[in-house]
Length: 115
Image 1 (spheres, rainbow, N blue to C red):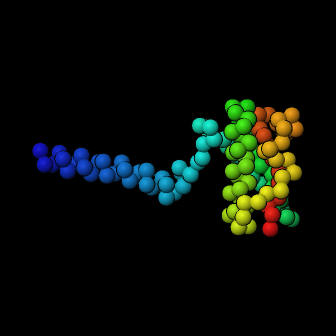
Image 2: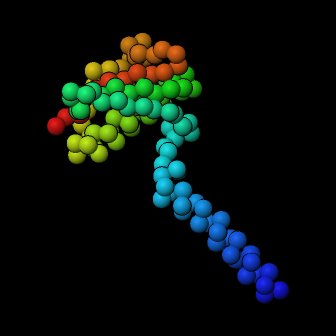
Image 3: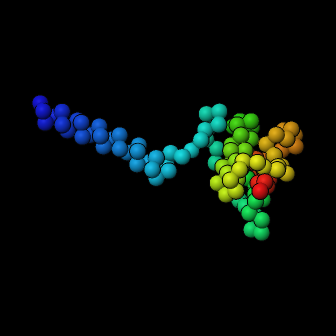
């Protein structure tokens, strides 16, 4: 009886540790927007690292959520690299829907971190 309890306890500990390991490695470092995980890619310009472009794939699932996913990527980039979240958008997430750049189910945004 005691042996079974010890084995069960060890198994539970190992399973709980799996979640901790994934968080340490960063595997669970995803953010959902309106319950949807978007694949976003930010690329900075070579000559001006403060300027960037963002591509948010799967935008047709929920355009408003895709806008927020793009805004999140910009904020994360600017805070990490320049210490603030201020962005001057050239093609921003707050633009009217008819002015957004959408192609092949991908929302394209662009801006520049304020220094």
